Length: 303
Image (tube, rainbow, N blue to C red; front, side, top):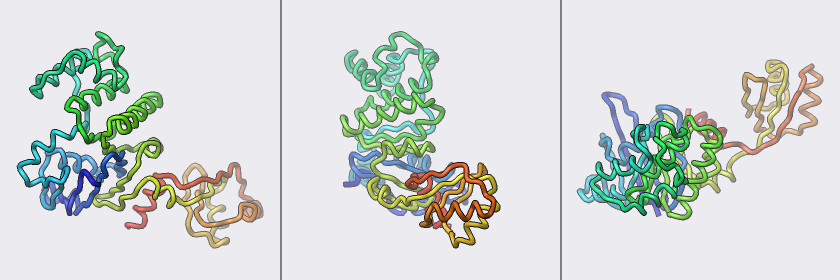
């Protein structure tokens, strides 16, 4: 079942079409990894779904309710989002930030409920520490605690891993998995750190220049990701000539001397040919295609 569906959704700013007839399907209880380059439309789609912007044309449904239905305002209470930046008051404590949001939303939590929110994001021991003294990872987790104040069924997170150190990324990753599994919260998350997205996403949507290129489950993606052979050489120009002589066509080169080959080739045959042409190989590695490789290949095919 899809909790959120868009139908030929479009958004224009002036004469520029930034969302181009998008059809998305966000399944219930999924962690939906939203993958796209800067300016691809990820944030704009989140803004449309949360009501921060209005579609130019097309439509969307939240929990089966169409965006043109007046009931959509009530349905949006099931959503929570951190889009572009987490709004925190740096001179207040974590708990006072929650109280401040309560005043803004016109709700009132008990002290136990506030403690429970902080416990969910593993900030139960921060005491009277001011937010300005929090690490970036702690601020992100507090932002998520505040996003949980309305007990959402769906959470939108726009680049929440940006700027985090490896420990902060790991903490946030574990927290999102916990909220998804224990609380049943459906998560739409965009991130440039695709290696981390691979560890948590159960469903993917790939977008480029405002168009959805593909939606796919993590299982389907894993089965489609091609095997590759990566070699590091001392001379890219000479190595490319060898690859062409061997009639290899599906490969990518990097300025650091690495070549990723997707064509089937026997390693010993390749090494013998490179050696015969005075190309030194310093490293060889066989691996499956990553989410980043898959996305880059989708863009290449779309062009």
